[in-house]
Amino acid sequence: MNSGGADDFYSTLRRKIWRATFLNTTIAKIYHYCLIKIWINLSYANQYIFRISNG
Image 1 (tube, rainbow, N blue to C red):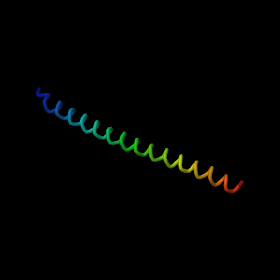
Image 2: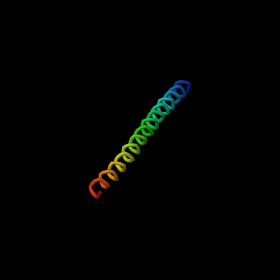
Image 3: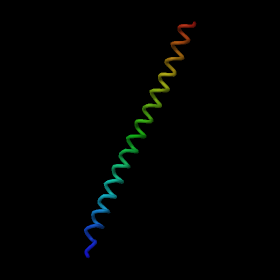
Image 4: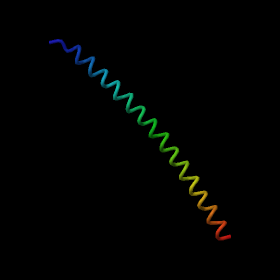
């Protein structure tokens, strides 16, 4: 039995999965960062509007 082909297949698969996971985590981090920034900006805007409407 020649298991070289299977080993190559699994190493290629592992590399592809790793690359996909890396890309997904990078995108998730950027997305999370943007969401936090938007949330902070919205909360600041809400405080500002609240102050104007009550002031």
